[in-house]
Structures are given as C-alpha cells and as structure tokens.
Image (cartoon, rainbow, N blue to C red; front, side, top):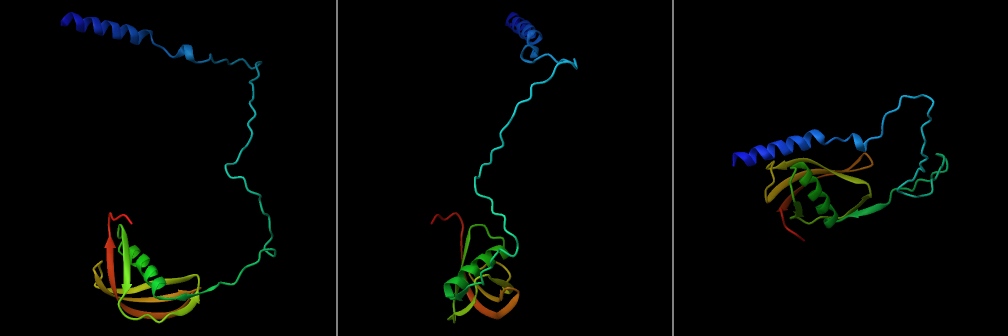
Length: 155
C-alpha cells in the first residue's frame, strides 16, 4: 500500500514538472523590424433594417385614440395595479362587485390607487382609485373589489 502511494506520488510529480504550456504559445518577439499581420473584419449587424432618417418636421403624430373603459378593462388594469402595489407573485385578478358604467377615455390612461382597505392582499377589499389621461384627472372612484390570487397555477 505504501509502495503504491510512493509510486503514484513520484509519477504525478514527474508529470507535473514536465507539463508545460510553452509549446502551445508563440514566442514573443520584441524586434521592431517585423510587421504584424492585420486582419480585416467585416462589421455585421444582427438586425438588418433600413435606417430612417427623418427630421422632426417630417414626423407625423397621430392623435390619441379613445377607448371605452368598460368593466373588463377596468378589472384588468386594477389587477395589474394591485399586483404591483402588493408585489404579489403569481397572478392577481380583480372583480368589481358593483355595476360599472362605461365611459370614454384616451388609450393611454392610467389607474392610480389612492387607498385600499385593508392595506393587504385579501379576498375582499375597498379600493379608492383615480383614472388619469395624458396628465389630466378623468375621475375619482371608490369601489368594493373581490380579489383572487393565483400562485403556481397553469392556465
């Protein structure tokens, strides 16, 4: 047993001392008369698309379109905002428990939550929120909301 250990140790030491990486490297030359070979690279882009150079006067802005803020759209936006407010993992679904009267607003509207009671993610809550469109307050609302929280559920 001791002999095998000594034999292994001597062979591994010998292999370690004789292994070098110098044979894989090119020698370094400090001679200034040699010129280095330059390689040419072609610049390639991953996305090939025509470039559009337009001045500010050539850009045409379309007016914001109007959307009807119905029950489903408000529930979807409330779900996103409540999920963000409580940093909930998974999916949060909000359901309005009272009738919602649809109205028109711009397509870039925002829903901002003012207050939730209780201030935690529970199955039934009372939410005070406001709807803003292009920096203008559209309206303030207070609605009872039923919440569903789905974690590790595959749809």
